[in-house]
Image (cartoon, rainbow, N blue to C red; front, side, top):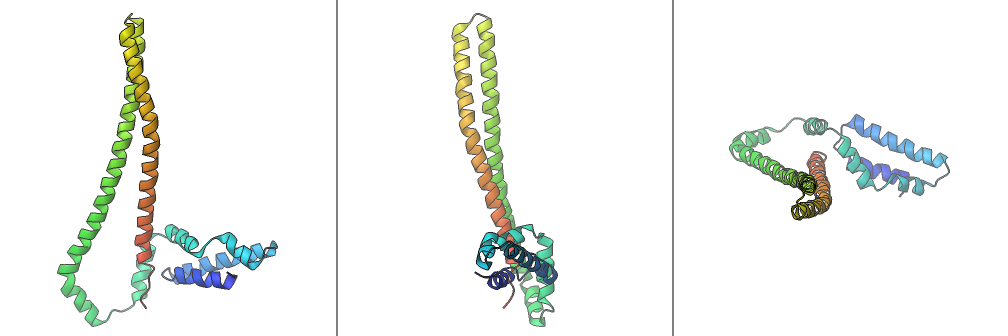
Length: 198
């Protein structure tokens, strides 16, 4: 893909951004490509170094504040026809509760998801605390002359410590997955505001 194709596709992907911000972004990438050309790269290689258009657009979208997208969407609509206003007002008792319900359901899903992640970390901390407590009790039992009790407690402490190590990796993976899902959902919501009416 050459420079013009890249910039054209990027402009289409970001068509919902405010015009001045869109021009700034395109100018930045135009300069980046030209800098690489001056370093001796071919146009195709320079464009390839920037990455796929979809990834570049997704990164720009992730960096753009949500209120900016909403303002631009409202501004780009211009003046609404009377019949659209009338439909919005008459349909308000129907569409507004549905919209609120959808948003509350989405929020509830993420609250439950993150609550489960917090519960996993709480179990992890309790395993660590139990392991430390059992090991300390085992050492104290050994000093008190109770070898069977000391052996039992130290064994339980080591078992809990081993379980906590395994659970740590599970907690870490679950947290990364939940964070990625939350980020993708936020990106999807932002992308709804980039679509222009045809």
